[in-house]
Image 1 (cartoon, rainbow, N blue to C red):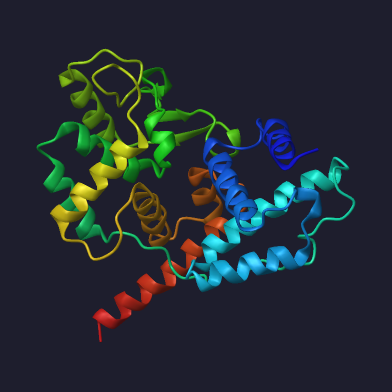
Image 2 (cartoon, rainbow, N blue to C red):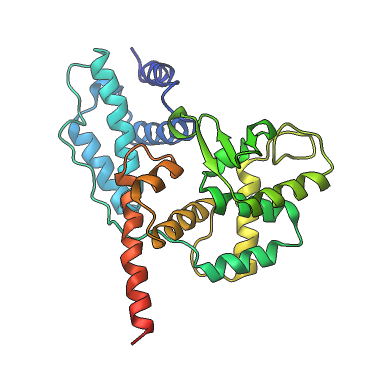
Length: 279
């Protein structure tokens, strides 16, 4: 079996488990590795992988990026080993790089207020920001919302096939509901999607990234401003209000609570700021 065939078999057999984003990251990582190491997959040795990781470090790749690359390769080779395509897994004794558990970048309450104020003349933009901040959903989850997914009576949105291909419901406020209704009442397109282009199709990630880049300049923000910043902000503000970890985990759709635990450090940070303000 050739490398290309093994890769296609890997993605085909994991199609139900991998999100589109995961497939994209894994394909990119595997292509990068086999470009660096032009051997057939069953000829690769641990030394080849270590050389690749060293090259990534020398290229100033971030530890988180290197970790993602190695996780992709590990997953591929674990699959090949289980399917008996190979006799030995070359990634078995290669440790994942450590990542600093730094606090996530998020907007302060006054910065969220400024964002909403700047966007108030643009109903679609304001509604995008309102939903992201109200629900904490991911970018691709936002872009795939259909009108039929909105439960107006219970103020919930059905997120279909989120990360890990799992469905969940997220909550939104009465103010957000009013914002969505006003936006829909004034838009001039027919589409099953909440946010659509002039052809009625779902808006793209490129459009969303361009939108955030535009508002990043308008707000003169020092930190990076992306849709994921809004997700961090949603979780951070709930953590600062001492919402239990398990609730935040459920709202974010995290499978592992360790992914949520980082936000709990923000409670201590907030209390320290409040203490300092009284001194």
